[in-house]
Structure formats: structure tokens, C-alpha cells
Length: 455
Image 1 (cartoon, rainbow, N blue to C red):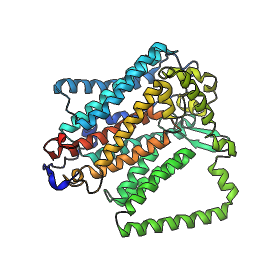
Image 2: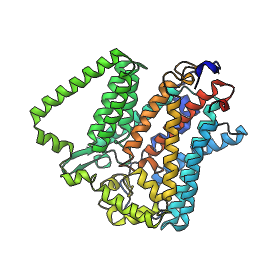
Image 3: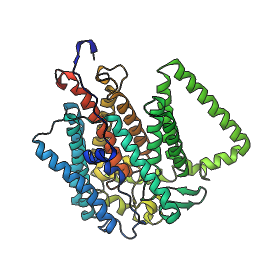
Image 4: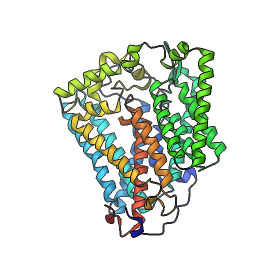
């Protein structure tokens, strides 16, 4: 892109809103709450329909937000979304159509139809937000801050629930001790990590008080470690490492700080290793598992192999949500993640999409994610003309959102909650994708002639 030949429009930085006004203006962010559900896992056949007061609250929550989105889309008369974003938003619609088709062969047609309906409600919210943001852009960095605020509230709810009803949010696991997993109240394998990533980014780029960023980062890190999830820890480490290396490339001082921090970590790790002992530290990291348990990802790989083998002979998949629950019915009552979150699924977002929508569904999902990352990267380059008009308007929010999305995609390898409706992680990932598409739309709108000039 030749910035010298592109004339940029003057775009004023949007005014930041109070938290109340922000959530009223952009209620899609309320979906990141989930909302919290204070109940234990439901027993019985989860491939069939069942409901209680908490299901009514959850469905009512998403339905109200979606109804507002429908009304706003109808009153707008036309949906204004840049071509680049439209080419991405068609894929969640196509995936939803596949889920709808799967109702015909699902072992639990009612629950598949119900979840398909909820899925389309989330897609409507996503489209409305991107369209509205293109016409009237928000402060994109505030969007990331509000997402972090939701995560902070949910972590606080988990900690408040701990002394009152510990069985809802924690569990004793052999070899791992007490794990603060959050249950259905709020996943401690997602929200603390969001706090840590956003806070680390704002600290490195001085986007808010560094004291505040550091404190929130430590809170997120401590809560993340309390969950004792090896996959989450590895995913968070990879994201923070990439973030730190990227910041170090921007200047000599940053490089020195990164090198000093790396040396300090090595020294601390060496002292801890000497004090605790290599064997005890290795057992602590592996939660007491043997080598087979580590290599099979706590038994996940065997389940994935069975589900992939099924989809080889049934390329259409098993039927949305209900299919895999029927397939794993015998494992459901003894599955740790099912017991705490009532999933009873695949322990992988990618395998979940495969069994729900077949090979065509996983192809659409991977294309959507890839195109989102490519588009976000295009407008998050430091010297891209689009990120400099106005200065800093989309550069930092885009990069921060991409790091959050990176965590979701890595952790999604071993967790299905990023593609299952009624989970805060599912809506939060959709919100992050909406922020990326919306911020790119703001950058596209800064060019003249219109976005069609960008190829």
C-alpha cells in the first residue's frame, strides 16, 4: 500500500463514554458476562432438551441484546459494512446454515434447533455491531478496556462465591490439588488471562497508569495460576512472549528491558529449581501425570481420534451440540470439564466445529479466522497509513485484540467453550472478532476515495 498516494480523511477521536453509557450503547459487550450461572452440572441425557431458571435467564439475556440489534438493523434501512468485513461475516452465516441442516439428522433435534437459534442470535449481534461501528466508530481502546472490566467483575464474582459455595467454582483433583476453575460462574481458564493480556499490553505501551496495569496483570496471572491448567499456562506464556518480543523490536530500550527481564526470570527459575528440586517442580507442572497422560493431553487425543474417525465416515458431522453429547454419553458423568461446565463435548473448539458442522463447517471456520487475522494484521502495522489517520485510533486496539484472539485460538485447541453458545468465552471471542472487523472498518473509512480503493 503506497501511503504517499492515499489521501486520508480527518477523523476525530471518539469521546470515551462512562461504563454505564458504554454498555447501553454497545450491549453486545454484556454478552461477555455469559451471564454467570450459579448451578451445578445437570445430570441425565444432555443431548435432549432440559431447562431451569438459569437457562431462562441465559436465553433471555442474549435474546434481549439480539432483539435490540434486530430493531436497530431494521431502523437503519441498510447495513453498511466494508467489503473486506462482509467477506468475513458471510462465513459465520454459512456455518449457522450447516448447523441448521444438522438438525435433520441430530440425535437430539430439539436441543440442536435451540442452540442453532441461539447461534444465529449471536451472529445478528455481531453484524449489527460492525455495521453500527462503521457508521459511528466507538473509542476502540475503550472497547478493550470494557472487555477487561467484564472479566474483572466475573473474577470478583468467582472469588466472592468461593467461601459461600466452593463446590461451584473449585474442585479437588488427584495430583493437582485444589483447582479454582470457576465452573459455570465464570471460566478461570479464560477471564483472568484476558485481564493479564490486556493489562500487559497497556503496560508495555503506556496506555494507562503503569501501576494500574501492573496490579491488574498480577491479579490476572495469580488467578490464572490458581486454575492449574497446563494448556492455559502454555497459551498465556506464548501470547505474552510474542507481545514482549514485538515490543522489544520497537526500540533499543525495550530490547534491553526484555533481555533484563529474561535474565531475571532465568535466575528466579534457577533458584526455585534448586530450592524445590527438579522432580517436584516437574510433577507440579504436570499435575502428577505420567508421560502418557502428558503426550495424550490428559486423554484428549484418544477422544479426538474417535471423533475424527466418525467424521471420516460421516462427513456431515454428528448434529449440532447434541450429536457429540450422545457420542460421549458414557464419559459424561466422569469427565472433569463436563462436571464443572456441563459441556460433555470434545475438549477442542476445532474438533467441536468439525463434529457439529462436518468438514465443510471446520473449513468455513478456519477460513473465517484466517481472513480475520490477515485483515487485522494489515491495519495493525505500525507504519500503515490506515493506523495513522487519526494517530493511534485503531493501531493499539487492533494489536491488543489480535493478542487476545491469539490466546483464544491457542487455548481453543483443548477447550470447546469458544464455539459453544451460552458461554461467556464464546461471546467474548465473537466480541474480539467484532472489534477487529469494526476497527478495520474505521481504518478503511479514513481513506478517500472510499474503501473500494483498497485492494
